[in-house]
Length: 102
Image (spheres, helix red, strand yellow):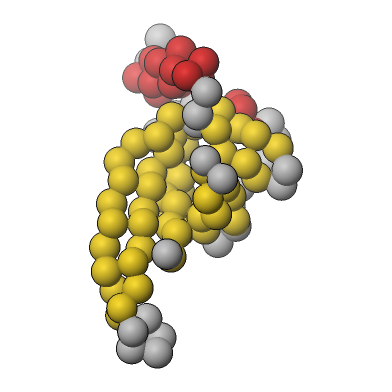
């Protein structure tokens, strides 16, 4: 088993913990990773709080089509926009960088 297969197997073991994103009305098992909160200047010059969340998922949970850049998903009932997608060499898993402007 290569490293990407081992990572996918480890993520699959964690899927039973109940974490999921909702995309197009369907729930997909994920594993939450790091969370970051930052303050940025908005378009009107006012300060905005941005929450960034990374989630990891097996590519197999999405079937033939995974969510793409700038698409909207929900995590724990909160809307996020996909601002980054990372894939490991060899496939098997992907990491989504989700952003919520509060």
